[in-house]
Length: 225
Image (cartoon, rainbow, N blue to C red):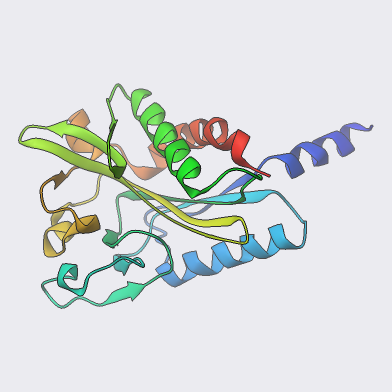
């Protein structure tokens, strides 16, 4: 096997990572959906094993399949309905969004991917000296805030024919105010925070991205078909 063939073989075995845009080059939410659709098409025709898409979105509220209209923005802001799991949330500047578009191996399911993504986020946080944790019965990654648990990372996934789309959003240095207009992820008894608030310094999505990318590759390796 030649070196070129070997490199191509490795590329086929592992999902590639692509950065679609970080501030100031924010990505419209519709563009994020298009990028995921293109990644799905490549998997379906056997061109690659998936793509991990990292970006910062323009401000947007989205609603998953379990969304309750009573949890929509109180200020009347528009909401984009999507086919992921979960409820209403916000994406925007200062938040690292990551879409791992992969085909799950036989025997692996969405719950396995959720746990792997949580593991990757917690590990990446530890690279910054921050402690993230799971809360039983709730997805995402949490921290102990001064007034109780607060969510720092959200997870919402969709799977069709074994191919997973959508993904994770980590609050890095975003203004948490947009969350106050909704019931984020349907949770009324906990808050929302950011990595920057925890660390006492600014941690931008572009700074977290390479750490999360490495941790993510390790966490999902056994789940990719």
